Image (tube, rainbow, N blue to C red):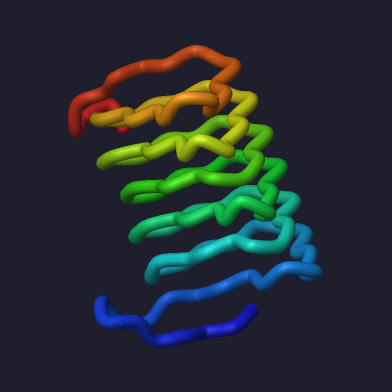
Length: 116
């Protein structure tokens, strides 16, 4: 896993051609351009790039998905599904944004702070 600095601080990157198997816990933002097979818990923002894949549940402060997620996603803030996103799993979020051509196959619960 590569650690980089952005204007907002430090974040982690799982680059393309990389596969991680197991549970990942991140206190900072994380970007997935490779593959993760396992649970992801992130206090910050999760970004799944167009070529990124997650097979497992995601719990985060917020998430922007452009790639593929097979698993349930729970965010305490905003979940954004970009046009190229495909999410197969249930969603729990305070706010949900879905761009045209994105795919969501699962149940959606619009939660308040106590539910996420």
